[in-house]
Length: 89
Image 1 (cartoon, one colour):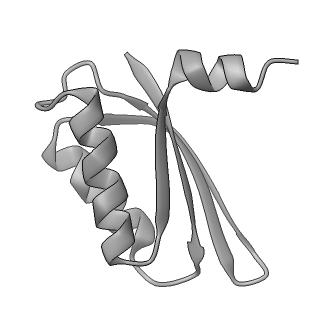
Image 2 (cartoon, rainbow, N blue to C red; image 1 turned 180 degrees about the vertical axis):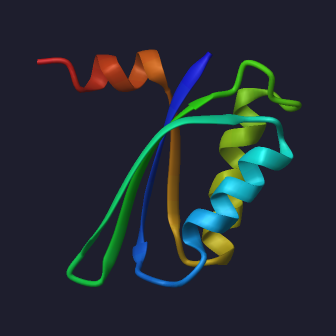
């Protein structure tokens, strides 16, 4: 299954690194990534495949949210089908 991760934060060193490391630790594959800096704000969107993850989706979602809160980074994880339904015109 696939999911979308969105990340928002003040630009600081290591945001991509800690999120990528967390995902790798749980056997989650990053399929695509887009990131930019907008006036000192870091914004990133990732498409991930969590089919082989070693934890259920809700725990992955909760774990990333908690890791982000510790670092003042807002991380949201949504299943791809829900993300697409919310953004369909």
